[in-house]
Amino acid sequence: MREWLLRLCLHAYPRARRARDGEVLCDLAGELSAGRGVAREALGLLRGGLAARAGELAGRTRAPWGEALRRLALPLAALGAAIWLPGAARLGTLDLGLLWTALVAGSVLALAGAAARWRPAALAGSLLVLAALLLDGLRTGIGDTPRTTVLDATLGGLAVDLYAAWLPAAVVLVAAALALPGSRELRPREVGVRVTLGALPVLAMLSLGTSALVLALAVIPPLVATFPARREPALTLAAALALAAWAPEAVWLGTGFLPVAEPEPALALALWGAGALVAGVAIRHLVRASSLR
Amino acid sequence: MGSSIYRCLIYRPPIYKIPVRVTEQTYFVLASLIDGPLHGYAIVSEATELSGGRVRLSAGTLYGALDRLRRDGLVEEAGEEKVAGRRRRYYRLTEEGADALTAEAARMRAAARAVEGRRIARRPRPA
Image 1 (cartoon, rainbow over the protein chains, first blue to last red):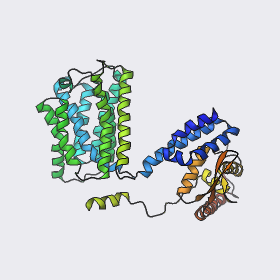
Image 2: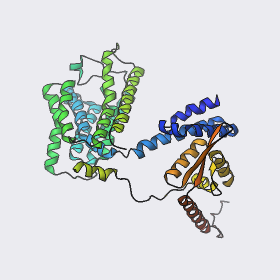
Image 3: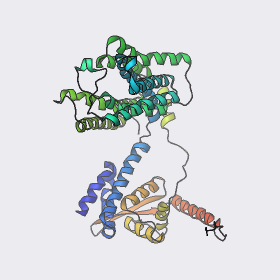
Image 4: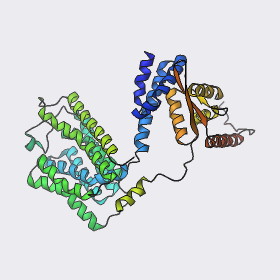
């Protein structure tokens, strides 16, 4: 039993470490646990294994996370604005309420800041959006009040809690805003071009109709503009981060293929977790596939 | 060309030597190896004894500390053997490890001198 528990906790270590040092480590833990109790040694293995995994991820990949987040800021802010602004337009200016006012103001501010590559504006805007979504989630619960906003025309009344679904993307957008420079570096002309590109998805949604296809097509210009064509590690990482932001939403939208009209909170959270898991696995593979080590 | 320059700028590992941070745990792990190579269990026992019972390392903590010390070049592996069905790996101090330990001991001696032999003014207790 003791041996079994220690071997189980040993799995907290990365596979390569386990293969190299697992036997020695397990024997030492077994020897020490004879005098001190197995719980302490089991916890020590768990803590050490998780620390080793974290160290490998952060230190050994030497990945340009900051640069990847900086690149992701504009496409992500553009996508957010393209979801919330047309939604507000449909509600009408008089019926906006506090939540939508915060979403609209935050989206515009985040988009402007990301386009200008200026942290204060982008951070204020993205935090405003995140706070609005979190407060609304706490107030009404996640997933139990399906609120279709702008995508319902295409998705045929599909019950998607878009507020909750956007939360992962909102968190990544805050991280992206933090990665932007604190002072303005771009020339006015560059800012103008980036603002135009970032506003394209919003304009497309307003003029061509609020559909997932229009949204997907309209977000391509800011993506192309901010991601250089040549292969760079930062590009791979940025793609992985984009996946992390959007995979939960993609899985959430997949509820349309499940026989549930309105996802229960537990199911909704499970789907959300599945999306995050998909994103995590994808990040791991993308980081491995690129030359980041 | 531009891309490779960019990658060089980002990914080149630092060429300077980062000073090793010696915590109390790593200090006693290093100190336990003064007399020669030891295996994990002996290091844990020796560190506990040298520290007067303050440092009681678990296998996971010891392994993490040894791994960091090995990466920093302060200790190195000195072979393995099997005793009573248990695999034991031995570690020994390197030159750098001995230097780091000596330097840390000197630093602590100097820090202790700043306090020892001086009368510490205490705030009077309220009556």
